[in-house]
Length: 293
View 1 (cartoon, one colour):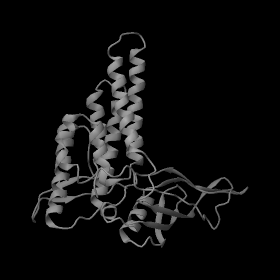
View 2 (cartoon, one colour; view 1 turned 90 degrees about the vertical axis):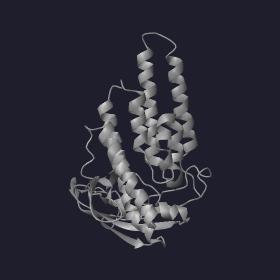
View 3 (cartoon, rainbow, N blue to C red; view 1 turned 180 degrees about the vertical axis):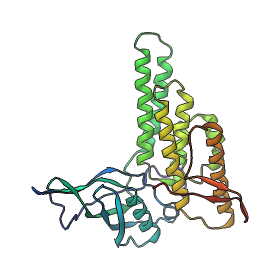
View 4 (cartoon, rainbow, N blue to C red; view 1 turned 90 degrees about the horizontal axis):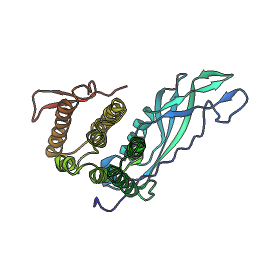
């Protein structure tokens, strides 16, 4: 698939159908609602093979709002899509259902739609908006005044919000780095250009932000976003199987490079326990990645 063809190619729809037998809000029962959700990325192999379909799952939600179990009740027709739906649902966190004002166990049916023909989010507009922010910052630097710092902070926050929205909504894996490369610095883009066609590298957006705005008021928060984004990048790499020795070696090399990059640039940001490198027998260094529960 030509990486210049698509903007956003995944449509996701969530249909809540049953909870404790019924999702109706009654006087004594309130259904669960989503509190936090992980990033959803189209499985790379499925996107490259143009797999589409709807996965219907049943989620068991605990009294604390965590997901205890996910079962596929109606397959999309492709195991790779069903597995992606299950992994996504495992990462959901809910406000738990309540009966008579007390949290209770519940079950919910959800349908996740994988569709290559329904653009739901404009990455092109994201690039335009971020570049416009950079231009406004350059113009602002030509002036002096009491409100300059306030305006600068507002624009920096706007850039950060755009990055957050992109990372959360850009499900197009094949073209993900193509758009990242347009908004980060040319130097950083050139540094990682050999990896653009492999796996999403969303953490580079936050690294670029830190490099551009070292005086930002809440750098600690940006580092947390960088770490969380890196975690999801690594988990996506882990969950997507590649075929062939060369692809496996390339995947291992990328993970090692990411680890070294973090060690060199962010020694205070731990990548443990989800990224561990151990030397061992085999064609290459053994890569061990543990999920963060």
